[in-house]
Image 1 (cartoon, rainbow, N blue to C red):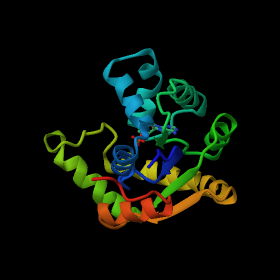
Image 2 (tube, rainbow, N blue to C red; image 1 turned 135 degrees about the vertical axis):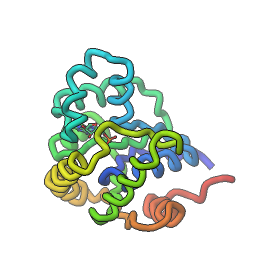
Image 3 (cartoon, rainbow, N blue to C red; image 1 turned 90 degrees about the vertical axis):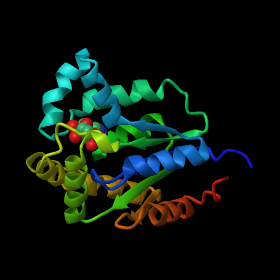
Length: 198
Ligand code: AMP
């Protein structure tokens, strides 16, 4: 069977499983996983010039200005190492970021991982409590105050974004409040991807 060649964005609050499911899709179908949060965290670890512009914003749980994020996304996509497609994780988060993306790239699907806020709190706080030893990276902004700010901002910005994807007929909403295999199977079927090879 040939490769599927899909350009996918995955949207959902922190703790919804964006990273996990993006990685599963990439492992099974040779897409490239592009996590914007990871790119920013890389810059913070390496104390780059970009990090100096975004560290405080990120630690306060706010969104980095569109102009900075768009530059990071554009230069990452222009590397063009994603011949079989990509899964973009963490971008777009606003309607204007989505419009920016549509100007330059033809997206195939937007996956929305739908999960209630109280589940987000539960997942993120237990992840933060487990800390680094368990394989999760502890984030500077994993505290209740920052999470509350992020979730509020998230809801305000995400609704217009989902509307836009819906209008373009490319939105796949998945109930993310279930086990990873259940969510993943729904997602695969919704994307019309064949069962992965073992
Ligand atoms: P994430 O790991 O996706 O939760 O991203 C971590 C942080 O990076 C966010 O809390 C924002 O401060 C910043 N960030 C990531 N993606 C975006 C985006 N698309 N727009 C603005 N800020 C972003």
